Amino acid sequence: MIHVIASVHVKAGRVNEFLEIFKSNMPNVVKETGCIQYLPAIDIDSGLPPQVLDDHVVTIIEKWDSKDALLNHLAGPHMLVYKEKVKDIVDKVTFKVLQEI
Image 1 (tube, rainbow, N blue to C red):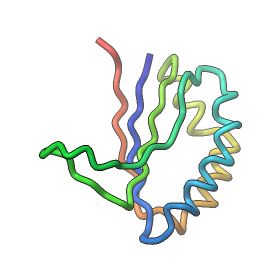
Image 2: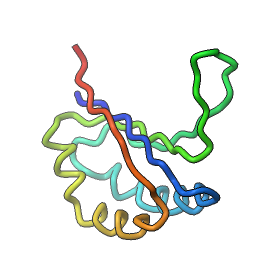
Image 3: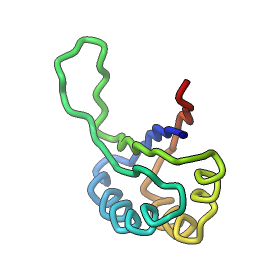
C-alpha cells in the first residue's frame, strides 16, 4: 500500500475555490482502480507547540494499493482537466509518497 501526503499551496483568498474544484473531481478519483482513500484536509489549531498552521495549504491524504495505481491516477484524463482548472489558483504542490514497513 502506498500513502501520499500532498501539500497544495493555494493563492491567498482562493482556498474555497480550490476546494470546490477538487471536490468536484473526487468522484472520478475514488472510482479509479487502486484508490483506497482520497480526501482534502485543512489545518486546525491543536495547541501543540511544534504545529505550524498555514491557511493557504490544503493537505490531500491518499492511499493507493500500489505505486502503479498512483502513477495511473496522475496521468488520468480527469486529472489533466483538474490540473488545468487549478493552475492559476495553486502556487505549488509538494508531496511525500510513503510505503508501510
